Amino acid sequence: MIETARLTLRTAEPRDREALIDLHTDPSVRAHLGGPRGRAEVEATVDACLRDPQSGSTVVAGRGNGTLMGALRLDRRDPARPGHVRDEGNELEIAYVFKKAYWGEGLAYEAVSALLADYASEHEDESVILVTQSANARSVALMQRLGFDVLERFEEFGAQQTLAVASLHSFV
View 1: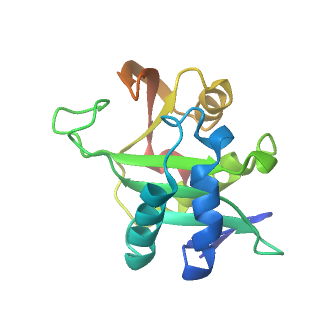
View 2 (view 1 turned 90 degrees about the horizontal axis):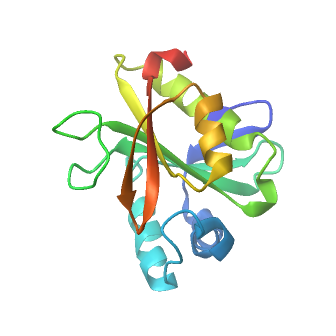
């Protein structure tokens, strides 16, 4: 568990299931994430994460009240997907998603910074990537505020994506 001034970052638990499903099926949240996903598909994904605490999925909750605000994922980028900084792929990748009610409050910055700082304190330095849809101006601004440098743009999910890279240890 990681705590910041406003947030608690923790492993997803069964009590989070419905809130995570609601988050990942919300059309406004999915607008820049490849579009809507069916409930059955999201249920299967959430259930798989709940079965595997090492999945890289982290719940972002309010520090005082435990309300689920969003989720983070820190894992390895699938080499079969486009967008890599090295030929073999498998880079460390951070991803985030927040309920619309919490957009614009700096929570993603706070959560991503805290998770990467915690991970960096226990691991060797390496590149970490962040990919967002280029049309998502808020997310592009966040990647720059976090200190990621834009490396390339590519097509995925029928839209242009922006890939940025940072040194993991820049978050310590």
